[in-house]
Image 1 (cartoon, rainbow, N blue to C red):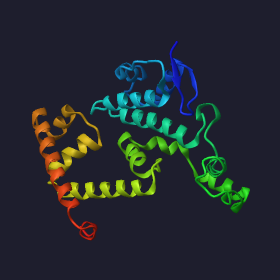
Image 2 (image 1 turned 90 degrees about the vertical axis):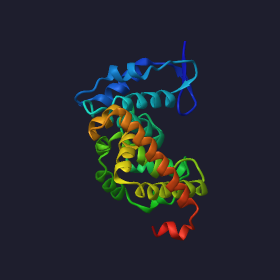
Image 3 (image 1 turned 30 degrees about the vertical axis):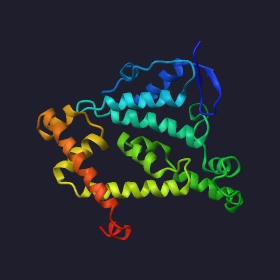
Length: 245
């Protein structure tokens, strides 16, 4: 029997039905996508002790790899799979069984258990206030994210378990990278956006740019080389100068 480790470190027998349900939900109401294709493409090999997070990440990668010009909706499948894992992490609950939490429940958990908020926040607002805020939130809007968009949100803007100094350093590096990107020619910037930000395959990029796959690879190689050179040049400059660029 194969056991899986859940996010709360508890262990339970592998339940493939849960995997199927999650992938099917990610594909729901999207044309040109297949839950079975995502699962088969993942090549997932279950072994005792595998974590639910590892399973989720493998499926996300699988859906992302299926994104093509002919099947663009896999970008939403990948986004939803990422979203499902993110919701479990943020809300610390099984949203499949219990539904999305209200604002007060999230505040209560983060104030008393997670210790992110001061507990005074719970008494600062009335029940009417909490209910009013709750009416402003439409969780279905999360499904409008593409994979590239949601991945950027999670990697760049959400608070991870790192200290403030590490977060500051990461932000500085991202800012320098953006400045370095702006120093590239439009042609090189475009090919990097298509390949690295949108996750497109060489074949699809070649069709968009109307060049050969070999030319795409060469262009990406040269763009990365110039990006590295620009980044290293910016690193050597005083912060006051880079901030004004």
